[in-house]
Length: 182
Image (cartoon, rainbow, N blue to C red; front, side, top):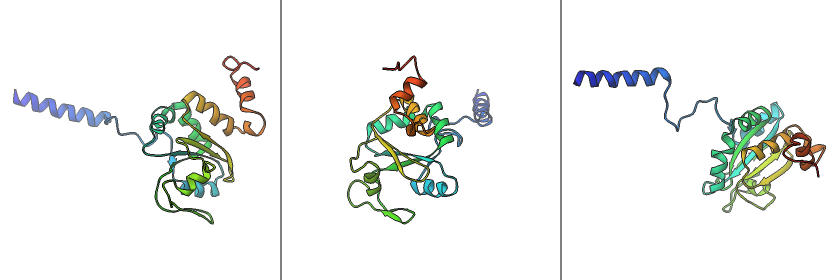
């Protein structure tokens, strides 16, 4: 009986190893949004210009965690962000200076100066900030967004429709059954 149990354990370990079994907390490197620091995104943008999407969050923010768990795990959202944007996670309460080019942002109070600048001195969490390929502000969008709504926004900005028409017009043209023209 003892030999059978030992053989069963060895079989299970071998099977788990061969099939690549991992615990639920581990992820493959090619899955999910490829998050960068703001400094990394700034450096990449100098070589290959691309829009930047910044998730301004805090560790204590419940809606930030929901957005991480649901919106930022949606396959269509992940694929589109990785294709069109440099994605940045910015903890609004992080300590330490951040240098972007010739500008230095510090943390003197509870909220980091860069987070304040990105949210127009009206911090709210989560806030998704969109910068163009020259590091200029397009739009900060405060609040939680479901994956479907978020995908509409990232494609609206990612495809430069924000330069041509209002978001409501874009939605009515792009999703006519869902958003009839008014």
